[in-house]
Image 1: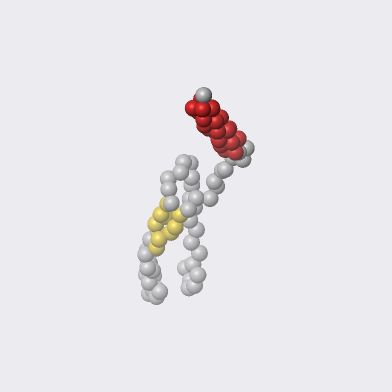
Image 2: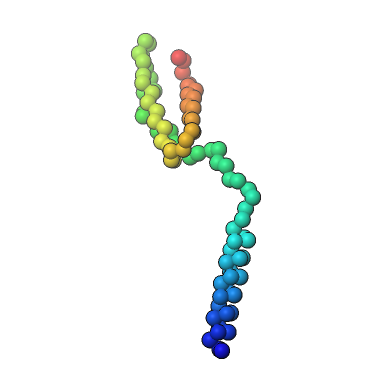
Length: 83
């Protein structure tokens, strides 16, 4: 009789814990991520150029992960000089 009582209490305790986990696990908010981590790596660019000389500006986009259908846009503004 004692063993039945102990087993009953253990099973009821498990049911209560399971019910509490199920009740607290529900969340109506949908988490939508719209900003994804990334970085831009660039090669060094010469500071001075001769007239008519061109310089290559290499940029590489390093993604934090691959998410579909994510698009990235890169803009470059020349901070000093002409051209």
